[in-house]
Length: 328
Image (cartoon, rainbow, N blue to C red; front, side):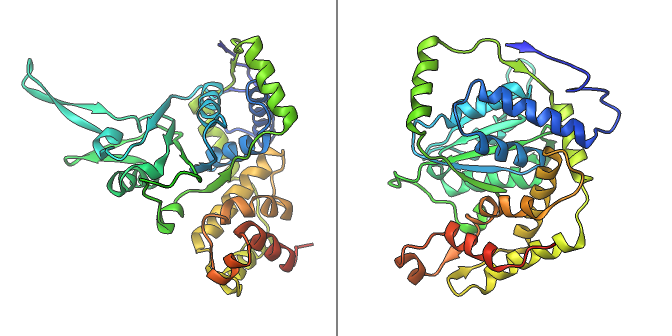
C-alpha cells in the first residue's frame, strides 16, 4: 500500500476546502476503489455521500457479495482506522464499547477501548445481536460518544458505521425495529454481479491481489470535506421540493407509515453532499431525486394490501417522484 499526499488531495489542514477540491478528491476515491472492487460504483458513491454527510449506512445483501472487502478497501483508501465486529446472539454492549479492566500491578482500572473507537466500523450482521447490544450501538451512532461508569469519551472524527444484514436467513435474528432503522442515513441493497462483472472478479483473483493501493486522504481531510459540503447552497424551491416528497409519503394511500422530518433533513444533507461531489455549490432537483429511494426505502411501511399486490417501497417512492412537481 502506498501513501499519496498531494496538495490537491490533502492541502493545508487549516484552510477551508473548496467545492472543486471535494469533487476532485471524491472522483479519485471512487476511481481508486474501482481498481479493487468490480462494479458497485453507485453503491460506493452512496457510501461516500453518507460518510461526507456524517451519516451511517445499512448494507443489505446475501453472503459473498464482498461487503466486508468493500468496507475495508474504502477505509484503506481514506486513510481511516477500520474495525470489523462480527455480531452474534451473545454479543454484549461491553464487547462493542469497551470496558474497565483492573490492573493488579498498579491497583487501578484502565479503560480498554472497544471496536467502535475507529473511523469506519463494519457491524457485520447487526440483526444477529440482541436488542440491548443493538441499542448500545445505535446510541453511539447518534451521540458520537461512549459513556461508561460516569466517564464520557468522544469517538474519533470522522465516524461511520456500515451495518450489514442478510435478507435471506432470518432464523435466530433480532430484526431492527423501524425506529432504530430510521437512525441510518441510507439502506443500500447489493445485488449479484452481472456475468461480465463476475468473470472480472474471477480474473482479478486469478491474477492476485492489488498491492499498490493508494491512500489518498486522511481523517482530517475527510472532516474538511464534510465542512465544505455543509456550505452548499439550497434554494427555497428545492427545500419545498424535499418537503413535498416526504409529506406525500405520509398521505399516500398505499403507505402505512410515512417519512418523518428526519427523512427530510437526511435528504437535504445528502443532496448537498452529492452536489459538492459533482463540483456544484448548489443543489438541483436531480440530486434530490437520485437519493430519494436510498433515503426512504427503510423509513416507509407499506399497507398489507399493497404488499399483497406485489408493490415495493422502491416502486411507491418512484411513483411519488413522478407525482410531485419538479422545480424549474
